[in-house]
Image 1 (cartoon, rainbow, N blue to C red):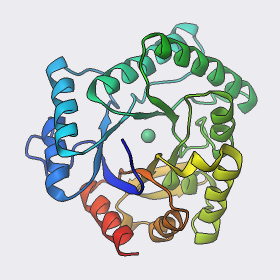
Image 2 (cartoon, rainbow, N blue to C red):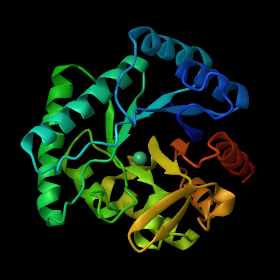
Image 3 (tube, rainbow, N blue to C red):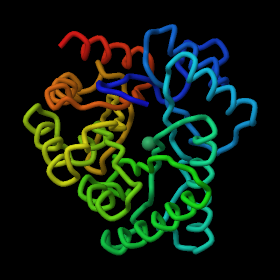
Image 4 (cartoon, helix red, strand yellow):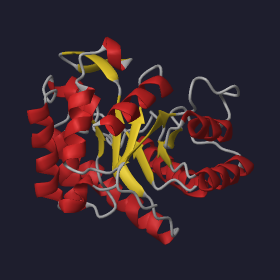
Length: 278
Ligand SMILES: [Zn+2]
């Protein structure tokens, strides 16, 4: 899908959708609301009937609403037991398979927990699994961007630095830039100047295309010293989303902006309206 601007959508089916458990209806709602894209949430498991995935692919194409996806929460590529690592790999592959059937081009997931291990060791283990996943997806002829998420808790793998290095080392990997998590995780990155620093760094380290076809998450958030506490609506949070959108526009960034505030479509629409107005 060609894109030269930011597209705005929701993490999952919009709240106002009458049949909330039906993602096909969700895509129709996105279109009716004047939003641009939708993320399929497989947070509690990767199951989808074939008629749903083919229906999604069709409606997404017909209405021009591209899809992204989010893998299950119980993924940990640094689990204590090898069989749990193996099943985490399987869950990522399963998410990729179903996302591909639905026509999604980018999928995100929380890669691992540190489990009190050295972040360097965890990095090596995550990188190893990502290479295995990349190899297996390529054999299955599945082309999808694998986007480990910038995570909000300091106990989770997924700092900005880790994702930049992983992107350099694994061809099909790119970061899912959750700017609200970055803010919650560090207590920084909430001003135009700081957002500018991050975007400049992504371009310098990952090349000029780093700000093209981005996969971004934005929501309101409250945090403590451990990072991510709670997702809030934007107007209840200190997160400076306007400064972020302004900086993204100045950098001519394009891609998906997925809103995971509790009010989903309300904040997504508010962000789209602001972005269009600047
Ligand atoms: Zn997430």
